[in-house]
Image (cartoon, rainbow, N blue to C red; front, side, top):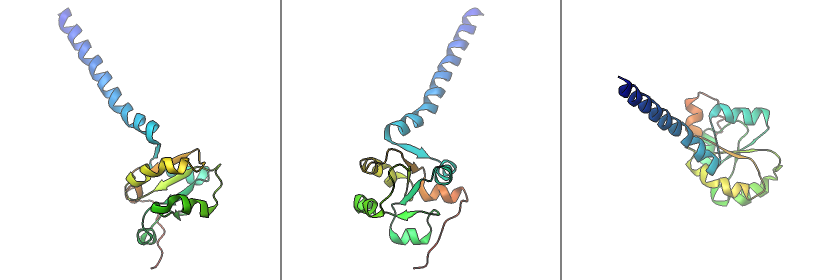
Length: 140
């Protein structure tokens, strides 16, 4: 009976280690590539920390619905777009695209412009919509 108890304990320890690693991997990915923000976390950054929201989508997608206070930043000319906005480098920046993938690619570029804290909206505008948060729409 003692031998079976030891096997059960080893199985539980292995399960604990595997589940812990599975929970930590997304955090590790975020630490390496930049801060991923849930819609709730992004809202906190925007409201409490006065973060700038830069929308990297096309102008048509931006007009169809963007986060409140978001500024359209041309993804292909991101450096020029940001420089033209004359943003205070002390404030954090939240990058937004449709799903989060384009934003993740732009983190290093935005950090190289002197912003020390840059986050992305994980899941992009799609996640914002799923969370039933408001979008601002502009006519064409």
